[in-house]
Length: 142
Image 1: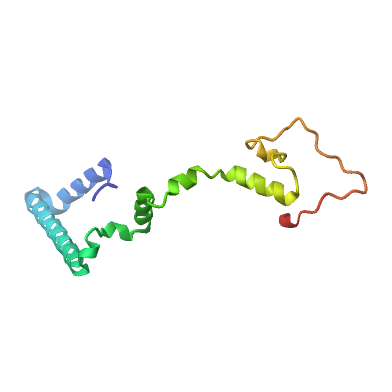
Image 2: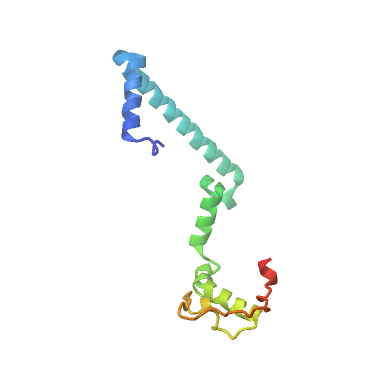
């Protein structure tokens, strides 16, 4: 519940509490706060239990944390009933993109600079165009 409160902040809260309530009343205030938090937790748990009972037996494994989209997706990916890990491991995005680029530009597969594991040969000199030559027009680059 208080995971984001650091030690310095906790000490500051205690000092402010002592100054506001005084050392005489502080133990009673702490007890009242603890009792209130306990009642709120009990109320929350009973409300969750009532909702589960109303939903019926088909939702017996329902967790309220699953309503958070990140938690739901993480739980579904860990379950992996569809074999998503197998698909993900068998798919090399860089290789697929290099092959697609080669096919679009009409080159032989593997001849593109990025096809060799993302390495570019810097020893090759770039093509020098003649005075009246225009660079190739790439429709996708515009």
